[in-house]
Length: 174
Image (cartoon, rainbow, N blue to C red; front, side, top):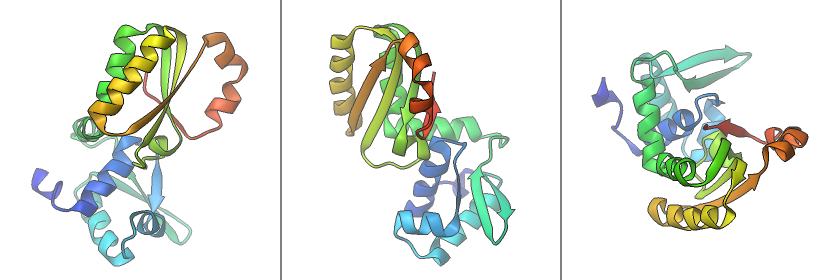
């Protein structure tokens, strides 16, 4: 099974896109445009990953949507490898372990959609030490070679403005 997994750069792009946030589903032309690849080259990878059980396929009208298969025996491992390769696990662990009272952490926007744009937007809900948060952000940027934009908000303010924050693409990490 694993020999089918890491055979090409295209496959790695697909895994990052669909396993970073497993609730994301995409169709062939959407991925083709995002990855700047021909639909034929991408279709081969998507078909192979689907036939191996790593992705699910769902027909909707004339489009076929692909999504990470959460029921696959290796789902959690692949998802963990993707997050580790992007450095998100390290960043979240450091935030959770040294900031104070953290209620929840969200990844927002591009990364929540599974797009590795080089900018990670993070929302921290809780009563946190802002100076320590900024220090961790700077350390995290160095470790993962990506720009990190962090916003912190109290639980009370989050509840008042929940529609604004959760109206954006989001993925609750903690």
